[in-house]
Length: 254
Image (tube, rainbow, N blue to C red; front, side):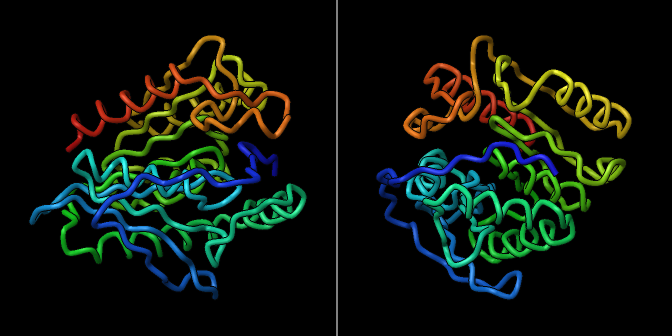
């Protein structure tokens, strides 16, 4: 498998404080996972959003995404697909983990389904209004969840890998799909985009892809350039535009 969206950050960023945020431990893949639930104040029920972190793990910046969503009125669960809340600082160790995980589609789907169960167990979540978003490799995780036929109203990928691990399974997707891609992302060439588009068309999915001119990979993470990896660069405007596109889709499907 070709690994896409594999970034790791030496230091986590500060998360945004949310009064109702709490850490949750749950079992998946034979290990303890650690995620963060962030819920708006009020009785609800609120739309629920799963948040799949980038390849490095659930760092504080990824936790902050759930907090931001809670401030916007969504109950968000930033989940862990590595185990133990691990955040990789060794790139080779991270690549090995992704190689292992990416070669087993059923394992990815089991991890995603376990996180969905946690989100749906939150009393303030409306189970009929659930979305899933993923960053880099996290997009692969949430798309595989959607390909199980899970009742997900929207799936959003930011600088996604666009992996198709089991061709044809996209026919099980029931919700809308939005992919936000840097047009000049060297990790995701046009050929990869074309293959993804064909998969969506063949499966008759309600899909859209936003391309951001002059934008590279990992454009939503402010620390992406600190790793010195070619092809990675934060772009504030693209990050803001893609986030607005996500909110627009949520408004549509919810």
